[in-house]
Image 1 (cartoon, rainbow, N blue to C red):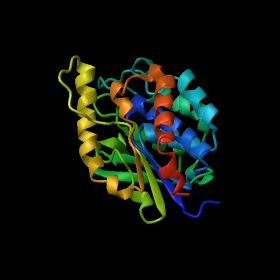
Image 2: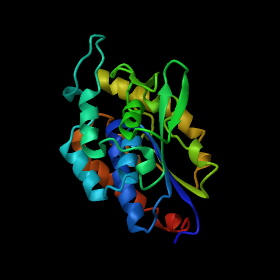
Image 3: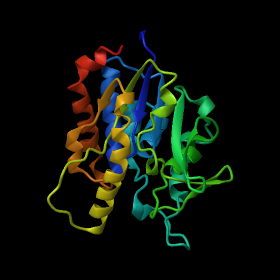
Length: 254
């Protein structure tokens, strides 16, 4: 049994969030099981699957077989933004009406309250609605109406939701899947949008690294965009391999 209560923070990052699966797979093999998870956007989705008791192989199968949050698979609304009904149906196939209280591992999911302009942490109620609220990327998806509020992607204000774990965990492992480095050129609208997301999120995350006893940020993810959902195997592999290079530091947390 672990001596410490270990918390796991999973960042947003679109398709790059698939790398979280590889990280969790490596943690399992090293004998590290988080007692609490906090996630936003893609990290909220992966964290929810794991917290609900789905195995790594089941989560891998989900991302390989389903085009979740894939822009071509959702319907346009009258406002010109994308609806999330298709994504809700997809997640309902797995979670049904499951609540946070029914999860095997306590979970926090962050989303941005659009009107109040602040981060909200869900830890009770409908898991699927919390995932959708946390993943409603502004300018692409309609805000998600839930609990008489409008929510957009949690990464808008907090791409690395470590705060809920600070007072309840002895050790915190943070996973951030949006490394930033200087680039020489950029082409295309989606590339500009992706780069903008990177830079917006990273400034916030730099201030939170100190919250973690170990911060995992696979540099190889620089090669992939937030929309590379067809690269699931590669992204899982990157998360797994990089985490395994940190095995000695991770074992010291047990």
